[in-house]
Amino acid sequence: LAQALSIARHFTSFPSGSMAPSRASLLAPFVLLHGPMNFGSAAVIERSMQHAVEDSASTCLRRMSSVERAEGYSTLCTSLASLYQEHRGTENAAAALRAENNRLQAEVRRLTLSNKELSRQASSQLAERQTQEAALAEALDKARAEMLRMQ
Image 1 (cartoon, rainbow, N blue to C red):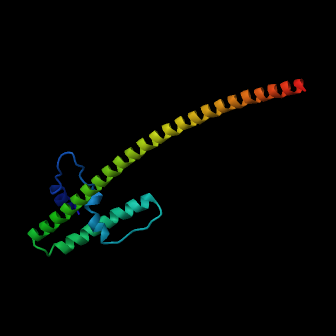
Image 2 (cartoon, one colour):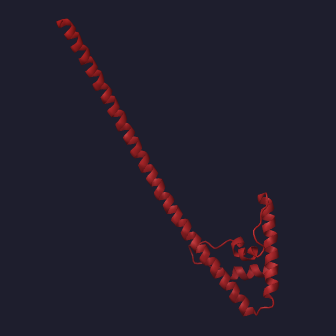
Image 3 (tube, rainbow, N blue to C red):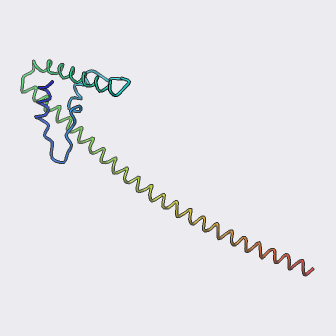
C-alpha cells in the first residue's frame, strides 16, 4: 500500500489552479474491486472503506507484481490520467451548476422584486377603487336624499 501511494503521489502533479484528487479518489479503482458497501454509520463506513482500500491495494499490488515494471507504470499512469480527466469533468460540472445556481438566484431576486412591485400596484389600485366607491356611494346617497326632498 505504501509503495502504491508513493507511486501515486509521484505521478499526481496537477497544473496550478486545479485541485488534485484526494487520496480516496486516487484509490477508488481499488475500492471498486470489492463492490458497493452498505453500513449504518459514518464511522463504520470510514473504517470499512479504509480496510477495503488497504485490501484492494494489496490485491492490486499482488496482481501487478507479475507484470513488467514498465507495463505497471503505464497502467498506473493511464489510471491516474483517467482519474484526472474525471476530476476535471467533475470540476467543470460543479462550475456549471454554480453558474446555474447563481443565475437562478438572480432570477428569484428579480421575480421577488417584480412580485413586490405588482403587490404594491394592486394595493394602490384597490385603495383608489375603494376611494372611488366611497365617493360614488356618497354621491348616490346625496342623489337619493335630493330625490326624496323633491317628492
